[in-house]
Image (tube, rainbow, N blue to C red):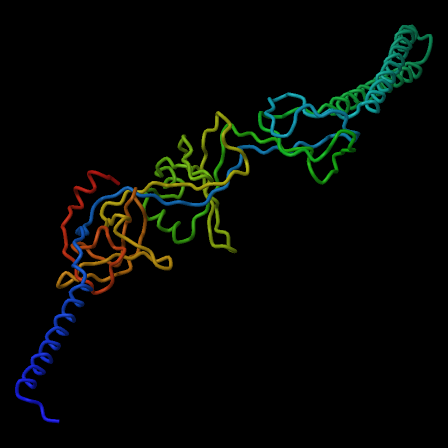
Length: 388
């Protein structure tokens, strides 16, 4: 079939129109999916002085944890204070049945009276014989015999007095009193229990917590850093240079009073490679108890370090990253090595250098190689608003 010239022209026009429409449609679709370049704030990394801290896990103990053990054997008759109560020095804690020891004391006192009576008789006998010997009525042998009897009677009195004293001490031991001020720990025995000095566990433990010791450990690397950082010829002199330390409690709150590091162990623990320090904290209100845990925070002053706000970072698999601005305003993610914190800022050792520009916020949809429109921010102005 042969088309007429007019029909052929019309068909050509339709084809060209279809091609043109198709091209316009593709262009419109591309423009619809093309996203605008994001405009994001950018800060320049710089070195500055900073105050930071080192944290170490700590366990707390009272300055004295006194085991309360019975000095005599007997049945527990009374418990004066409950677990957790505060006891004053000399305050009764336990009462052991004293019938046996009271009887022994009565018997010892009776024996003492008898010994004193015998001593008195021996003294009278010596007094009677002495003038007879002086007048040569009887021989001095009788006087020596009487004197020996008196000496024996005196020895019996001394022995009886010792027995009385021992019985009195044992009777006193049946009342167990607090040797120091402190809080009462667990009481494993109940009224009616048989207790004695050979028991494996004490009657309770009395914790004196007017002041509290916090024990924490440093690794060998941290210990060498400590020795190099503080002045002094000995470890003791270096410890005296340490500033007051803070105690972070288990709920991440800061204990209101600061403490002081006082001592360090003489050697490293070979098993775990650490060395223990001891800090003391005042505890007048009894807020801290033996067995508490927390963290010791030792402040440090860094003269010069790279500082990056935490908002300018993101984490992937426990590593911290930043987006660094490169050529053509394209960003690239880089991992950084964090050596400490100061407020809401990271102190950085590796990953970026002074002068690098990093994205401060709006990183949720950024990818490596994406271009941005940088909006410069001043780190100094940010530090004024949110100091370290």
